[in-house]
Length: 287
View 1 (cartoon, one colour):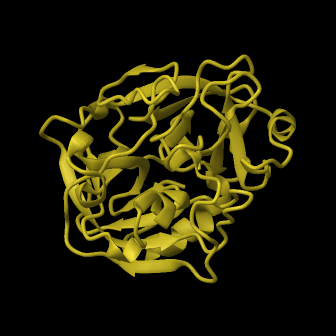
View 2 (cartoon, rainbow, N blue to C red):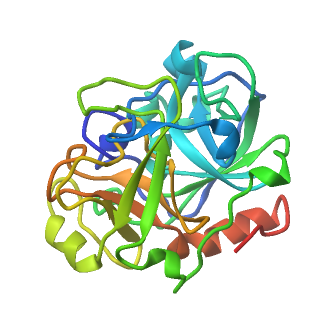
């Protein structure tokens, strides 16, 4: 849903479902390919940001960049959050239940290198309130077949947390398009952005073919003058402020354009869904 060409640019990514789609997935498998890299950012070390993971499927996206096609955030030892639209047929090319090697790649900053961990996704739960027209509720919960280290978990910011305040400095992470012209990074990158006010976001996205900004379920971040943003391939990746997860890369218009900041799934809005899924696999982490 973010930027029209692929993952982050699909406004119509995955139709709303009447109940959380919970799909058991086949055994572990390699990783995938995506198309979005942080614009205006710089390389960072995966070891210093262990809660950033790649969502991948070599079967669907080939071996380049380990099959990465979206990003994700580790919020529990067996729980990763990503964007709902990443798991749509429009992105995957087939229904989700036909993807046999969906996995996450952790602790690997260079997607073309060895090392790190490749962990199969055992179950997928897509937010039943996800709306592909407005882009509201753009989140899916991935339950892993094997646990990650507790040190990889990032706490989530609940309602009213100061990390959501306009003007706060935040960082967005990903392996996506670094220029908005299809120049994908193979190494993890991050860009510093500012959390923007709802008024700025509503003015930028009053309701267009890209989507409509809804303050209850979204937040936006960037620079009003442009230049720093997430882009294609970064969908589902984390937006972090004050050491807390506050958003997931969701959608926007272009990459780094003045007046068109990136729009993120607001984590405080989806905590109940995350908690319900975590109860099935592990204690709720770091809220």
